[in-house]
Amino acid sequence: MELKQAIEKRTSIRSFKDQEIPAEDLRQLVRMGGQAPSVNNYQPWKFYVITRKPMLERMADVVKQRIEELPANQSIASKNIKNQVEWFATFFQDAPAVIALAMEDYESVLEKGVDVSHQDINILRNYPDIQSAGAAIQNILLSAVDMGYGACWLSAPMMAKEDLEKIIGIEEPFHLMAFVAVGVPSKDIRPKSKKGLDEIFQLID
Ligand SMILES: Cc1cc2nc3c(=O)[nH]c(=O)nc-3n(C[C@H](O)[C@H](O)[C@H](O)COP(=O)(O)O)c2cc1C
Image 1 (cartoon, rainbow, N blue to C red):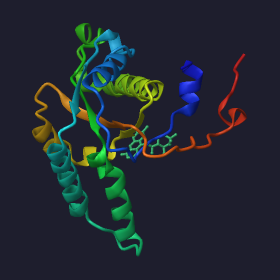
Image 2 (image 1 turned 135 degrees about the horizontal axis):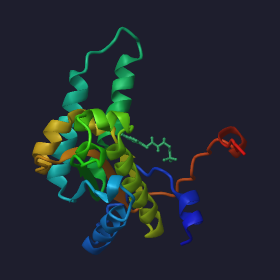
Image 3 (image 1 turned 120 degrees about the horizontal axis):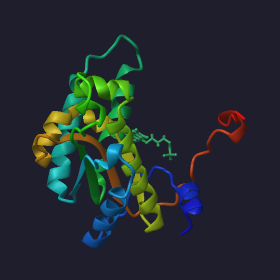
């Protein structure tokens, strides 16, 4: 598939056929993620691929529990909103595979020459670690389309990050950043419409 076609065909897929993904395809998706650009080419990532159903259910349970613990506000919609968010944060439990992206601290060149902490440099540089993670995830999403799968990027489950790290077995210096749920789409979903070019493009010449 051409890159342009994969970009235009990609849309978030949240409902999957009950069909396993061959390990070789999962390896290929992660290989593509690992080809992404990263700060100083540090590649501060590790990809944990979970296909074990009971583990996915346990992961969804801790996310649900975390959402339940969030204090509700006074709005009438509060309960509905919580239910809605719960679904967007836990549908991954029915995916054939979930890729958990974990990141470690990178070493900035600047860090070696100035007396500024890693954390402050990260803020000054606008979180290059998070930006690197985004590049890796987009590579995975587009590769999934190219290989006939559908996928969805998830950050909502990170509300239960520490519990999830324990379940998955992510240890220091790595920290959980995001999930990508992957599988064969259960139905055809048309990509969402996006802002027109005129709205987002400004040529400064
Ligand atoms: C950083 C990030 C976090 C996201 N987190 C979630 C999530 O937790 N749950 C979910 O269902 N979708 C999540 N999404 C998917 C977005 O909702 C989706 O990309 C958006 O609605 C646009 O739809 P499209 O991907 O089909 O173009 C996330 C997307 C991004 C980029």
